[in-house]
Each structure stands twice: as C-alpha cells, then as structure tokens.
Image (tube, rainbow, N blue to C red; front, side):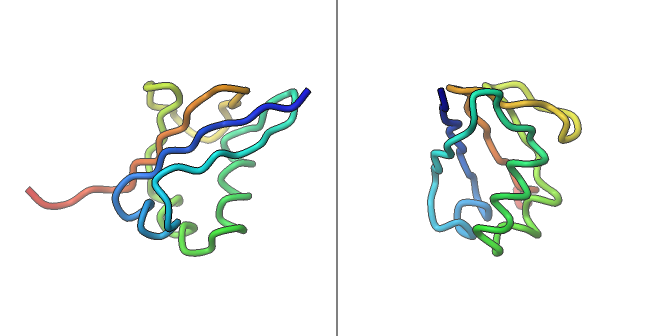
Length: 85
C-alpha cells in the first residue's frame, strides 16, 4: 500500500517550484531523501540548484546528509540558504 510525503518549500525554493507545498506519492517502503531530491530536481529543474545547498527537516528535525528515509505521513521542509537581516 502506497503513501505520501508532504514537502514544504520556503523562500526561493517556493518561488522556483511555483508552490509552497507539494504532496509526493511514495511506495510502501518509503523513499530516501536522496531519491526524492533527484525526482524533484528532474520534475522541477529550477529547484535543482537550490536543493544542492538547502537544509532539510523531517517532521521538524533537521537531517544530516541525504541517506534518511521518508515514510508515509512524513513532512519534509526545504530551507534554502537565507540572507538579509
């Protein structure tokens, strides 16, 4: 049985994707962050340079690297580098 992941995009990531939120279907065993990012970059090429430098939080906890797995019901926040003050 498949599920989905909710992806929340902030700042320039939101602008590049043309949406603040994307719901992404995933298989029953989930998906690695690396796989998900590759798929997003292919589907929305404007996101690719942003994803290379962004920070990611799964369900409110920042992730290190891209080996983490996402499962049905998870929320992934994409935080591109911020500037200003």
